[in-house]
Amino acid sequence: MTARRNRSLVAPEGNTVGDADLRAVRTALTAQAQELRHELVDIDSALSSLREDCELDAADVGVKTISLEQLRLQQDRAGAALSRTVAALGRLDDHSFGRCLDCGRQVDRERILAVPHAERCVRCEEAYGRL
Ligand SMILES: [Zn+2]
Image (cartoon, rainbow, N blue to C red):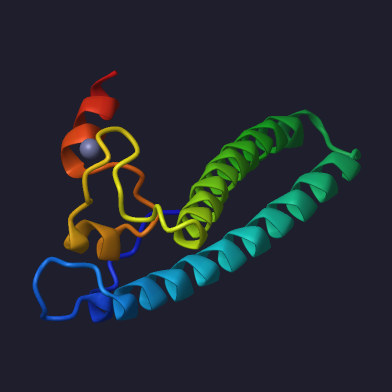
């Protein structure tokens, strides 16, 4: 799932993450986690019904392999997104939320509101992406 930019989260006041921001972020992350859990359940049942459906001819087997692969990719992505989301909720609980995991600096408010599960500031994220 791609991170949606929720412009309604962005309040006009400065670059400080306030309590209202944190509440909005918590709501967004909780909804995102819920959505991802549903997605994973759906993927899981699609995978099992694909596996159970054995009466296929050769052409169907090719199609089946492709959709199995797509579903597994989808499952990996949703699973990874869910762990990032749950980790961000954990950081909200232990009050480390909003700090870059690498350099420890405050992540830009705009970035936090646009990508609440972000783990790094833009600079560290770029460096991390190049590894
Ligand atoms: Zn950083």
